[in-house]
Amino acid sequence: MENLFFVPAIALAIWGIVSSIVIVSYLSDRGIQINFPLIRLYVIKYVHQYRKMTQEEQGRPGFWFYSFVVSMNAALVLAVTGLILL
Image 1 (cartoon, rainbow, N blue to C red):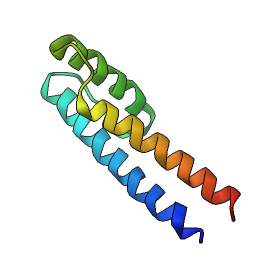
Image 2: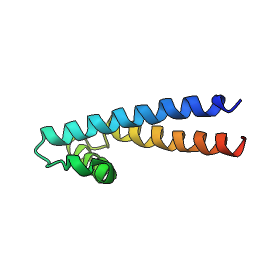
Image 3: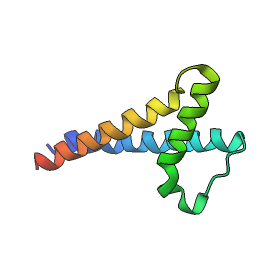
């Protein structure tokens, strides 16, 4: 029963990690200095920089911003729900 929530939570967390990798790559290609040793601490900062940058270029935040935010929030909700129902 607990796998009903934890397996999708893990899959969504992995998708969030993929999204953050794409975001960091996008920023790095545009000359933003990335602090790789402390990337876990700065990932939220980079997501917001990506949002700001794509909003200025396209008039709205890029796809990967929404991909990161939705997947990480959904993973959190599923994991907490799975823990509550244990």
